Amino acid sequence: MYQITLEINKLEEGPYLGTSPDLPGLIVQGASAEEVVGFAPDVARELIEVMLETGEPLPPGLRPLPAPTRISIVVPA
Image 1 (cartoon, rainbow, N blue to C red):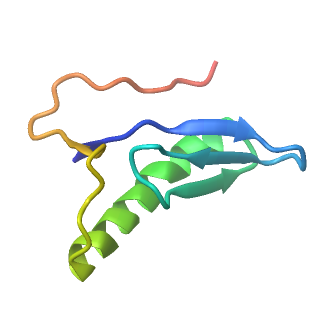
Image 2 (image 1 turned 90 degrees about the vertical axis):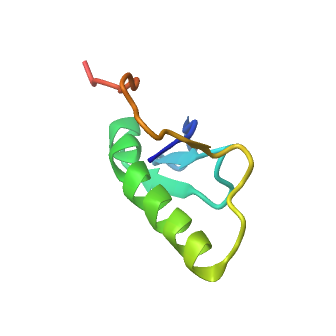
């Protein structure tokens, strides 16, 4: 399990775009910020799996969480 920062911006065209400074290559688009947050973990996991399978080094900003006990989550209001 890894912890990453997800940055979400609303595009002028309407949808929202999520990227991460911790995981270059992570790009997630959704109709809402909540949708981006929902899609991001699966996209990040797939990107990390490809990096591990191809022998590409993981970015230094990627922080493993060996035994998470407290994780911040976003709850839509």
